[in-house]
Image 1 (cartoon, rainbow, N blue to C red):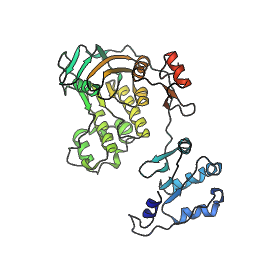
Image 2 (cartoon, one colour):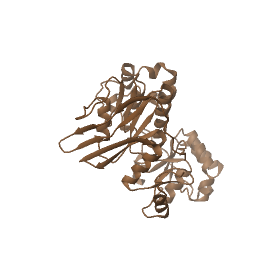
Image 3 (cartoon, rainbow, N blue to C red):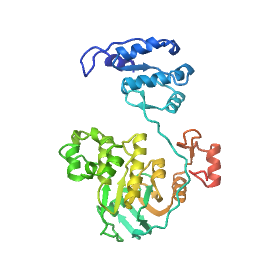
Image 4 (tube, rainbow, N blue to C red):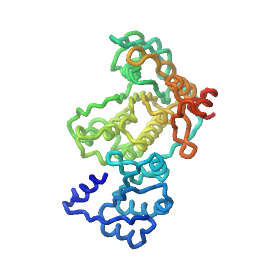
Length: 377
């Protein structure tokens, strides 16, 4: 941390001019109005080293810190929160981490909601399947009977290497089942788990060729283009995008297609918590507005809970045998999944964020006894 700050303050990349430094008061309560204004007037970057969110004087400085953040347009960094307690309280005060350098900066508050599980509605059936089997040299997947309803979002959960992506590829027509049949006249938009940036050109070129509605539709502008902050990516080359940027581009491209069903594999990968919430809301609103169906494969339990109307649960022996059952109601599906992986979740009393219970803790034993591995009904 100190080494990085010393390197950072030698020269500014943008101006190639030395960055002036000043010492923060030894005790934060010594920061007077005049010295506070000194930061605003003289320095292009504010770095507060070892800000302690657990101390009351620091908490009283939050309004001034927020003013700093506004004035410096986000160029405020907080460093060295060393303990779990400090990090937890920092999150409580709406401060997000920059993991590469251990900094914390102000960001939008991420809200988690405690809601009862949705009941599966009796909507018109879009597609039915059953008796599906896919056989590989060392792995086999068996899929039980099921159906997907119009306007419904199906979450797909299960351990790694259990056949979730294989199942989605069969539905998308990318891979044919060894046994059984799937309706082939459906139009499907498939966002794969692994995205290959093989397009030569900018993001703008890619969207103009594949997803023009992002520029012409006010609905997609409001639900995808603006929340995904895509305007900042338009002039970037596709092959230079980071994992998170590429994920947002791929999801947006998938969701604007005129299809009967969206198949989205691992949409939360490479996205931070805020972007995951934005993505889940976008998928939910687009499905509700269009009346289309969607299947979402993901490992983020809260993401799946928030977005899904029903669940398909995968079980078996990873890498050898997979068995898919469902769709179940969200309540039954989540209990089956968590019972299979032998964990229980609780919700934080203050933030409502889902957290894994410590094995054999009071809450863990109580929830297992009640048969409620995730929800409090």
